[in-house]
Image (cartoon, rainbow over all chains, first blue to last red):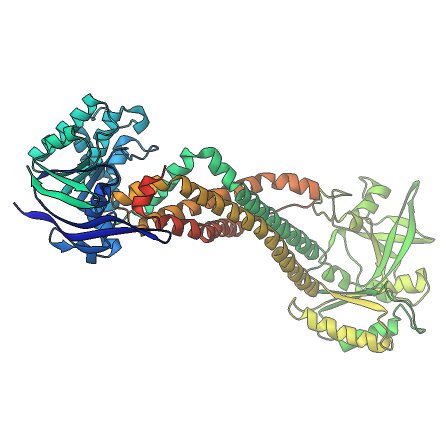
Length: 227
Length: 408
């Protein structure tokens, strides 16, 4: 399997006034294509920070990070937007859908920034919404959907531009058990079809679905390869 | 890879629409500002057109008028009229003048049988009708022969004819003007200029129809009996040469009156130029006043956009997450501000045009809207959006995606 992500001695510090707070203290990870990886850790452990850096939403203070053999730490911010758009799909605990757009438009959003034509955007958005079972809700606003449905919209949006990795941050955190289980099944199916999935969670039930679990405590990886 | 301008406009429009009330409140300043631009520019244009029409009706831009300066307080003993000898001298000194008409005015009672009428009678020469561009509708005007012969003839205005003869034929009839019996040889054509909306007569030129004309020589030798000419009018060969001729006449007349400004010498062309100059100043001043209201509108919009960005921080975070570049966010918010102010501008133009009639009635001046002022209003309002949209757009584009996503 090809290595998608390679992180070495990654550190991240936040400045809060005059105090520097360390979030990541030298993380080493390698992630391969087709993996279903869970990053586990208690709150404040640095797992979300790690996910933001992996997803190119944030940059590291030091260390090296290769994404598809490209050193991200050396890429200009403008180019990071392209990576976020083309290579990464995000799924968040709070869904993060735009409330005033209908779900089809929400799913089209990454394609809009990718410069796709209207026709192509609509076709692709409908296709992925169909895959997550929402083809009958295209014109609904997010507020008209249940939590589980909203998360499926978010997954569709993450998938629509065929990214290399899907990053999910506590994707079941706001859902009841049944909906959460449905969402995890979707992730499993996507992984089965070959998608690389990284889930950040503190829930062991979520981690059980993954084929590899990394534990992070106080900004450090505790074990590299629990399968 | 980028969000297109069209996309930005669509996003901006849907934002505008989904926040209707706020959007409308935002643009009130712009609407009022552009509205006042439209009204003021239409007003200036209306005044200009009216005045120019008036000048054209009164003999055009090549006309020069010389009449007594009523502001002059007599310092030394100088005549406030011209003698025939002086008139002949002045005429000989301005051979370039195309027409030259000295005149004497007198108030007089007319009667024809039982009908009586009081009006002004003017002693003129044939050049009069050329200078005023005004001819008879019946009979003929005063001729050179009439001048030579001091003929007892008269040409009357339509109003005089109406009062004395009603519908009957006037040419050829004899009437009494003052104490003299004169024969009507012509009736001047009816003069009319729309004055609706203004105070007074519906016809701005009604006073001309109340006049009557006799040969200047008859007036001097048989009428007043005095060689006193109150005023004269001159026509230059064209409007462009009129100011120069005016200066020359002024020099000649000042020379004849020992440098005393006993007479006013006025060129229609120069008046028109002065008017254009004044209109320009007027326009600039009012434009600046409108601009202040637009600036205030712009500041309001900037504040609302800043607040809106605060409110939409999470949305910006989401957009950045799915691949929007900073420039996309910048363009989105800038386009939106420009869109809001341009919509304001359009509403301002529409409301400005719709109140023109009301303002017109209130001010008694016809307002004239033009296409160019609409372009100006749109450009200015879009420009306001651009200027005041930059700062909020920069603020939006500089948001950190992680921080923006955490925003509640």
